[in-house]
Image (cartoon, rainbow, N blue to C red):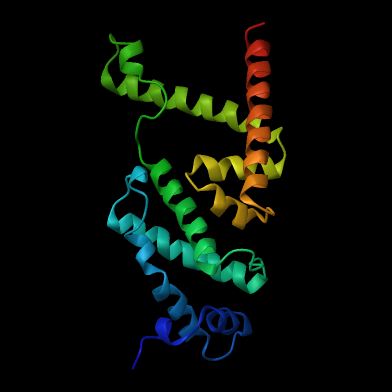
Length: 196
């Protein structure tokens, strides 16, 4: 007998999950199995282990099931693209939780400090830079924030256009340009205010 994820179409899986019938578990399992390959296709740039990717995928399914039942999925992209977007965000969350130095190398700036102090300062520098950027991005509006997050997470413009409901890739690209331009102006303005 074929496994459930091969037996059911994407439309049947969606309908089975939304109806909440006694057989709903079968459709939930079909959804889980159908896109499991995302675990092994995760972007290497996130540097997460197989186990972490499996956890991120399990979280993805939980979030997706909740959103599918609420009707948040409008079918503007394929179910695969929708799940992949959630999964990549979960991978980023896992990657960010790891204690890595990303922004400023405090060991170069403060060579005389013990290693524990350097690590602490590195985290402080990174947190301050991220806080400033996040505060600045809030001034852009939700649509620009979401678009720039997708860009920062490495999604292709076609995927972004599909996920965000743009009429074309060109429209999404144009909007990205405008959002980046506005963000750069805000960052420059923020720097001038900071150094007054």
